[in-house]
Image (cartoon, rainbow, N blue to C red; front, side, top):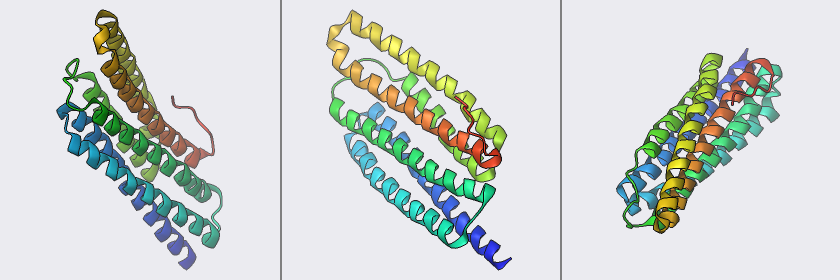
Length: 218
């Protein structure tokens, strides 16, 4: 009983750190797009700094997972929970990298006037942030229904990405002077789409943790 309590205490700390890491990722995504909308270059620079905190948390959680496996020797579902934590922190780290890339792209655009009002990218961002939040909640709570909902939401992100691609492509055809910035905006849309894919990967780990099955929710 004592060993089980110790195991649960260590696992709870890992999960709390994963939630903290997810919060930093959400903040990073939000700041990255907000810096683009407002062309706030200082906010973009601050976003880049958040990525360092995300990277450090990944290492901290990874060490904790290794220690838990080495000292507690978990089996079956407990072991799947820990192995999924390994995968999830990598997903979160990659999301942070994409947010950092968006911030870097904002710095590249600088103060040049935006070629079009930003409507779909902010919409896409809100959906992506919710996916990140829900995927982590599903993992912490072992909520299979919520995990599947994240996979379904990924279709909305893909549709928005395609819509943005088509609009920017048409804009570039009509006005070649927009090609440079339009390419940067396409890159940002693609980065958001990839973040959504990583959120879906986390949701898939929920299914694996519960049933030992590698599901494809995308």
